[in-house]
Image 1 (cartoon, rainbow, N blue to C red):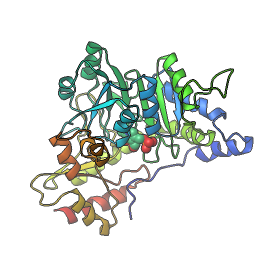
Image 2 (tube, rainbow, N blue to C red):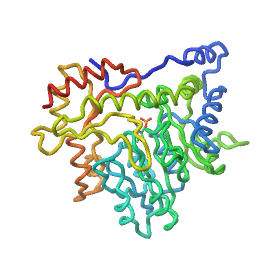
Image 3 (spheres, protein in one colour):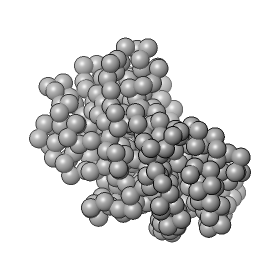
Image 4 (cartoon, rainbow, N blue to C red):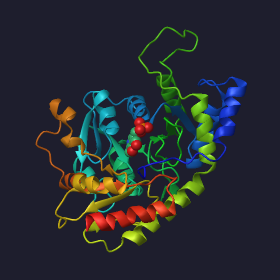
Length: 369
Ligand SMILES: Cc1ncc(COP(=O)(O)O)c(C=O)c1O
């Protein structure tokens, strides 16, 4: 089976891990954590980085750090991972959804503008699958209405919007370092910001809100979201290779597109938009309306050919867990609904070889036409 995602760990990962073992520094107190934070921050042009246990936790801490809570509305795309809406709901704020663009799959900026009310406090911008959301109009909207921006750059290591690094926008940005990302730490995440006070608040939330001076007396509740030195050691090694990884993913994406161009009814990812070149975090495809089966059936057909796949995100407004909470009832977002049913992605990991890409593409042609 060609796995849908396999990481590449052939740089300095082993060397740095051995350094942790040899020195005994394995907890979050070890030196790789601060080094990873500083190097990630430098890479995206931010002043501060706060390493945490995963991207979902980063989003939760970011929402709380910005003081979002009951009565506050946060606009976000319906087409995203549950972590985004969950962070808003867990803070007792109100998620307000928008549909996505049928070609880039990123949030619809015009709809975001339409959904602003006097209670709107923030926009959670999420970059999806390889192309960034259209940041400039979103930043202008936030500026005009005095809104905070959380930039979810979980999938965007090494990507830029009009030449500005993803992860550099808004009040706070977050990354994930899950093994399918261009930089992995096994499990891991980071919050980045230019605001020293916000960074300090995130550090406190990450560390159970221990107080300086009165460590075990707590004014508020945080979490233990600390990243270990072992994880950060892997992250530092991965970051050294980021440019190479992005170039490799771009080559893989272009190769898939060459091999799959012309497959009837198959929408392929855009190579670029006016503001960014695709980094193909994953190589997503969408079945056209004329194709007489859906993504589930397509993935079922590809399995015996040894091709691992993943479905697209399932929209937030169709999540049973939110419906049970009375959220998003009677809301419809036709683009997200369509791509959720008709979209899936092909093996996209950094360890994928050229011959595997050829094998996958052959299987797609044989099984889906
Ligand atoms: C857009 C987006 N946000 C957040 C996350 C959550 O990150 P993690 O899996 O590290 O919790 C992911 C995970 O892939 C993601 O794709």
